Image (cartoon, rainbow, N blue to C red; front, side, top):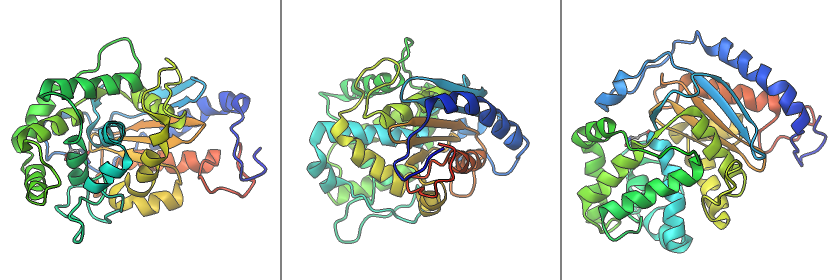
Length: 328
Ligand code: GLN
């Protein structure tokens, strides 16, 4: 039982209650059919809409999971969080801020909009900002930049098999992603991107097509929750000094034009993707991954949002929870 605002997860209690809570949430929302899979990227339309999994990894490396947690899918927008971390490591916060802001847009993830005054994209969690962020990744050429990106994902995922780009998803988006191309050209016009546009877009489409499963999402989230240290391999995936920057922008912008309501109701930093994944971070405690491909109108997983709302309520995860009535 938590008795103050200084939340502390009682590990013993978690081990007992989490398996049942996850099973209950999975069976409660399994029948929910609302929403539709993303189809603006042709490859994404092929996914089985009924897939559903929930996974939690604690900062001490305990794993709790239910459903199709080994099912592979492309990470899509969730990759933006990690590319932002790499850009911060490559250039430092001050420079990155000259190219990408940290203001929520209140608009859709794919809005073609830049800050009127500064001409920067609003934040790194929407497409325009993510393309600008990815264009900052250092490397002597496209291959080295892609390899640095994949190495970075490997540190978070920490599994013994390699991290791959799904070539079909990548080429599917490259041949249809003209809206993203339009944003990139607009940013080129304002000097927010200075590298070869097609190369920057290729790297962005490749990062979105990185293959993960729900366990990976939870472990990546747990790594962010654990000061950037992967709780299973103990490898430092990202410099801990940037964790607060990454989590702040996830908190305010990670769920697009639902970010305010999410912060209000769920109260933890999170990021969604049109694959149907949601990755949520409970700082110093745990990472949560949910995968269910049916999306609402804002591009967030319908079941994923429900599961996170209930998990937050049941476990008292909201960062500003002070009622003393939570279970931990
Ligand atoms: N690759 C997708 C795009 O750029 C990612 C969008 C998302 O997941 N919200 O449109």
